[in-house]
Structure formats: structure tokens, C-alpha cells
Length: 330
Image (spheres, rainbow, N blue to C red):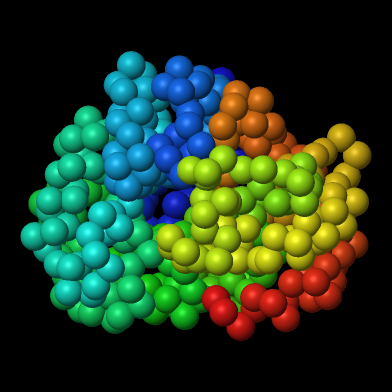
């Protein structure tokens, strides 16, 4: 197993590898992934030093959690932090975020993962009003007291939601979209999280693959891939697909970004290295559909820091091509 840098995962008392593994694609919405391929991806990530897996109860209606649970059952001595999410299996109304539902959702995730106590449970991008309800966080504290979960966190869509959550003393970490095409969190969210001791988990780090530089206007995604059916937010928040950027705009920006990759690194690895360098980031969680992708993503942790000239070029690219389109939304 390759050793990878680890960082404190906010208020959990645990550490996470700086490159984790997002497992949405092992459940659904990215086309079909066979069980054997899913286990191979998990194994390759683990061998490459990844010790942080992120999942959710809605990924394949629990399939992602179940695969992770079965994988880790055969590796009882492996120190992996598994973060799951809850809330999206119910209608998205603030009144559905209460203790009875939390217990039921937690019980299902614990069964799927085969554990008595979850490492970390995150509210899964709930309605904005949820973050301001004291009863919600009292209920989350109860889950910790009942040892259903060791810690709790939130996954957010907007910077405003992140800042509201960071002010809650029991929130261990905040998961937010952060990549070279989504810079707004750098302005307030990351500084506030550092000040509060809250971890930052960066999701959608490759803008749904745009930052890999591999897609063209002729690329065809499967019908059950969210990059086909959610480009304008038809199924869930638009920001989860291509970071909310128009596809044509994203292709042009991605082509330019690819030119910033240092010798020996891919565009995707460069994007991950850029995120790792942002002060306050605990872990970045790219997904992987193949062993090669899992290994390549993990290898980004071993790249040399990007020079200031590259960081400035990323900012310039964002300001010229992307800011006007998305900065005000999230």
C-alpha cells in the first residue's frame, strides 16, 4: 500500500487521505458499473493510499454503501474512514428532516455498510432552511449520543449554506463543490472553515469529467448518466453536473486548462493538485470507474505543488470564461 499524505478531517478526530474516493459512480447515474469492477476500483484506491471513501444512501438506492461494506468486511484491519450521506430518499421539504427519519435513515446505512456506528454521516444537500433549524442539529447530536454515528457533517450546494453550517458547533466538515471552474468557495467558505476547525471535502473536483480534457462536442453519454439528463438541473441541482457550466463553455475552458498541466501530469491530476493546495481542504473526492482512473487520481497527491504562475493562470481562466456564468448562483 502506497503511503499518502493525510489531513485532519475537521472535528471528527480522524484523518483522511488528501485524495479520497467518491463512490456515486459505483451506485448509479454514471452508467452501469459491474460489481467486480466496483471492487477492483475500491481495491486499487486503497492500494494507492486512499483512506477516505465518500458515499450516500441514494447512490444506487444503497448499492454503493453495500459494496463498500462488503469490501471492507474482508479487510477488518484497514483504517478507512467512510462518510455517507442521508436525506435525499425523502421529499425535499424541511419538515422531513427530523429525528425519527434520521434514525431510520441511519439504521439503513448502518445495515448497508455492516457497521454499528457510522464514521461520519452528512446531510445530503437538504433545503436551505434546514441549516437554520436548531432542532435538526439537536437531532444530529442525538445520533452521536446514541452511537449511531461518530460524527456528523453537511454536504451543501451554496456558499451561504456552507457558512451557516460552519457556525454550528457540532458540524465536523462541509462538503462543497470546489474545482478550477468553481472558485467562489475560496473567498469566504475555506477561510471560515479553517478558523472554526471544520474540514472541507471537495466534491465534483473534475467538473463531472470536463477537467480531464477528454470530452468533445461529439461525446455521447449514456441515457442513465446524469451528464445526459441533468445538464440544466432537470433531476437535481445543476451544479452537480459539469459544475453548473454550459457544456460548450466548459469544453472551451477545459481545452485551455489542459495547457496548464505540468510535464508528466494529466489535466485531471493538475485539477486535483490545484484543489489539494487550497488552504483548509481536508480531502478531495474524485470518482473512478476503472482501476486506471483510481490509480491516476491518487497519484495527484504525489505531484509537486503547482507554481504561482499556474495558480494565477487558473484564476485568469475562471475570470475570463466562467465567472460571469455561474459565480452569482452558488
